[in-house]
Amino acid sequence: LEAASPLPIIIYNVPGRTASNVTADTTLRLARASKKFIAVKEASGHMDQIVSIIKHRPEDFLVLSGDDTLTLPIIACGGNGVISVIANALPEQFSGMVRAALGGDFDTARRLNLDLHDIHPLLYVDGNPAGVKALLNIMGICSNEVRSPLVPVQNGTYERLKMELEKLYAVAS
Image 1: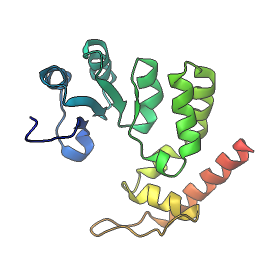
Image 2: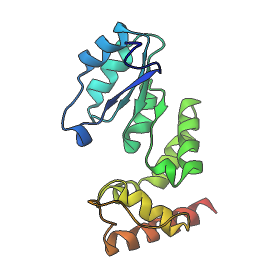
Image 3: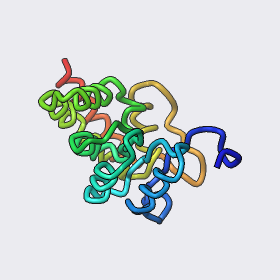
């Protein structure tokens, strides 16, 4: 394994992108097979599978949410964090939620999670990364361009993102 990768390896389980689920048994077998496997980015959406990995994993193996909307429940079940989409645009809010949850402050984590709830689906309705690029564009951070064959979000999605971002900032102030 050292020859294949001199760096630590995160198992990437994102069936929505790969059209194949890495089962809990496979993840756990890999985690036990080598210290090179340090974590799994778990975006199967199957909480039973995710909790099984959390319960049976080696002590130093991390379980990271790969689905922003499931990050809070995954952490509540013993997960270790997230590899996020929304944090690219709203790092203060999302990382605040993650830090609160990891620290056991679930009242704060729930509040911050609910603040972001209506933005999440808009980031994916027209595909990822188009949604987060649109949000970053609304915030004045980058252009709304994406590489072909991807296309920018539809005008309706863009306007809904603007509206939800305004609501989020109104809640925060």
